[in-house]
View 1 (cartoon, rainbow, N blue to C red):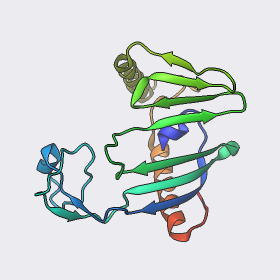
View 2 (view 1 turned 120 degrees about the vertical axis):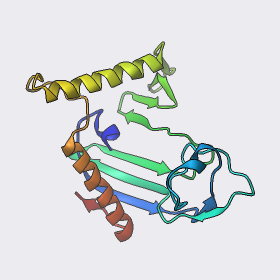
View 3 (view 1 turned 90 degrees about the vertical axis):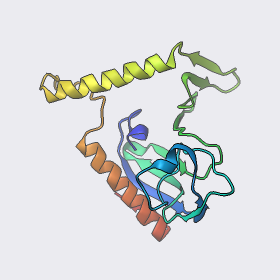
Length: 190
C-alpha cells in the first residue's frame, strides 16, 4: 500500500473491495519454485517455472484476485487490482495519476518511461537512460534515509524515503478493511 501512498502522502480512509479465488486447484510449477521449503503446495507460485501436464494439482485456499476502490484523506480517489491468475503476468505495479489538464502513467515493466498525456496533444514520453541505475540510486537514497534517521542525524521535517512501523500498521489496517468489505459487500472505514 505504501506504493500507492507515496506519490501524494495521503492515507487510505475507506475501501470497497472484492476478493476471490478463481483457481481453487492449479498445477504445481516446475523449476525453482518446486524446491521451495513450503511443502503444503499452497504457496505463492509467482516467478515459478513452467508447469507440465504431469505436474500434480494442489489446492489453493487463498484469494488469487482482488480489486478495490480506495478513498484517501483529502478526497483523492484511487483503485487497485491484484492478480495471481493473469496468464503470463509478471510483477507489474503501475501508477496512473489523472487530472483535469493532464495524466501521467508509470509502469514497473517499463521503469525508464513516464508517459504524460494531454487532451488533443500527442503523448509526451520522458525516457530515462538507465532505469536499472535509477532504481539502484533510489534504493541507496532510501537506505541512507533510514540509517540517517537511526543515527539521529535526520533533520526534523526531512522527507522520509522509507516505510516505517506506522506505515506497516496502516497497510495491515487497509488489508483487514478490504477483507471485511469483501465479506460485507459494503464500504469499510479504517
